[in-house]
Image (cartoon, rainbow, N blue to C red; front, side):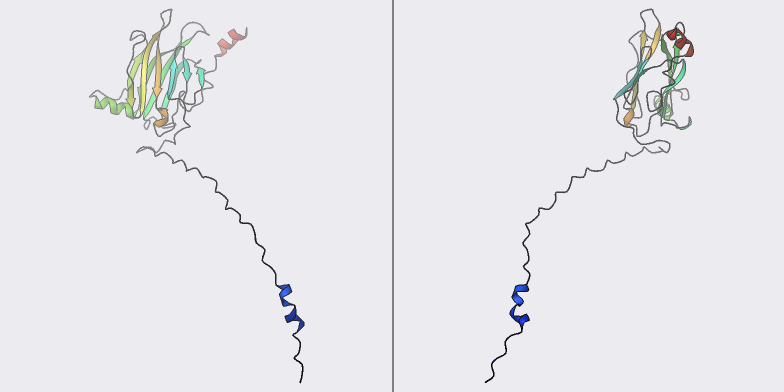
Length: 221
């Protein structure tokens, strides 16, 4: 009888070539980094085609007081050294006169010589928000609201006046030598929905804070 043939070598050693599947240590799924919720863009009020987005939050109050010392929307402190009429606020910033909602102009005058102190002698508040308030009170519109130094006793003045979302106050002051002047305060500038121009807003104040050439000569001599 014929002997059964042996299995071919491939069949005999097949099991030695079957690869083992390595067991990997389980890897924890990475924890996703938390993503901060996007900051929503503020919505501009109706008709705000000339306005920008809100500026970076700054102090809740800006002002021009004394001779005069100013604090703007960014919390920068500086002294007003140049005489003349200055725009303290202009809302929206860069808006034309016909579209401005609120503008505050202050006339700064030097009392004394070239390097004497400068004070606000008059303040004029104009703009669409002001005209709306005047008409609501049944008064003649078109001239805004004006204040003159010396028209009231020292430390007296207005209550907080609301124009749009901004509130303003004007207070009378008087120096020890009897010079009458005006102090100005404003709140809520960062809640308008617009960029705010003027020395107390976003505008550059370098020129206004520069001493006159005559005063520089006195200081340097």
